[in-house]
Length: 461
Image 1 (spheres, rainbow, N blue to C red):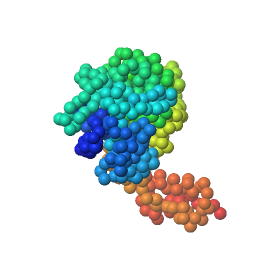
Image 2 (image 1 turned 90 degrees about the vertical axis):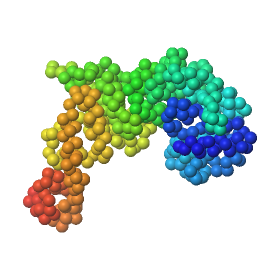
Image 3 (image 1 turned 30 degrees about the horizontal axis):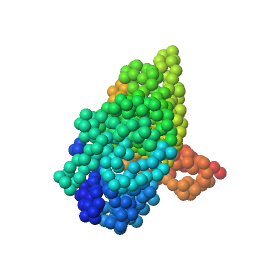
Image 4 (image 1 turned 180 degrees about the horizontal axis):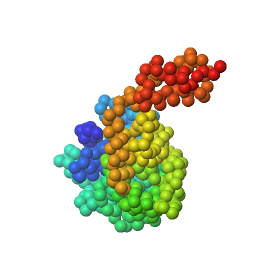
């Protein structure tokens, strides 16, 4: 997101006689020498005035004083189309526009997410009092040597590494319950500690997180998993009692022992946290959720057998639980399918050295197979650290061409009809048998494949 575009918006508002500043996360990130994901502008101009000054605008929340000003030559119609393409207002702003918000004070939040009413104000000082955390309540004047304006003690908390609400934490969290999850995410992302009073309020109010939409809870959790600090985030979720509310299935992993010969690291929760600790910044959302849920079926399948601790059927149970979690959090069908596939296939690597060539090649042509392979590597590094199977499959992948993994069929349904077969369930059996031989390298030509069918699957008279 170009900073110049945000400064241009500030300058234009100033030229029209209004106050205007950069505000919020972009100021925080600039002070931390980080690249802001987006830029927000705060102004005393009302939404109507902003839309008059910038004719090409998109009023995503004009009743709350929020208007998007498009950048990079885009139009209001472009922003509207982006919003219709299932992007949230935050995503639209991040990718396509500068968010301009009018100074305001908020009324009560009866839904625990949005104010029932807002009152526009004329001072930036009043405006920042409604914001969430001190480190997000800073203003910056880009036209006055980047002067920082701090009414809430945000600079001191940035320097001390503290996440603290602006004002009374119970009031801030009562206004918007999602802020509890955001406090956890910011603390993990910046490696800060949460102010004790703020943290105690989260622990008391954790059961109220269910007032937040499942989609927003999902997105906060996904950010925690993919910002490179998933382990501390989930430790804080657990300590804050939010984990019990949003993902009780993960909490149940705590204290579930594992066979020490395979898992010297400890219980299922410890193993999962160690795996999360290896997810880098920008890990795909499906890999991240697959990593979190790969052993979700273990707690309910735990048993102590005569030989060792066992988790019989934990994959099948885990698949069902992962599906329920994905549906509960309103994940897309594509994401759900991949996450379930990661859970369903993570134990199959144990048999890869024993697989027939055809079975191994079919395994390697799973959609997004590199995610399966990476999850296996992380799984190993978080337990016994033996990467021999990972190395074996990686070598196979490097040595095997895409054509060898998914070869062009040598025989078609039309060929089977020409050989006297009647279309039906047997077609699949025959074509699969031919493909097996192809994958094994035993059949390489169409003539040989047709002869294989005649010999092994004679047409019924």
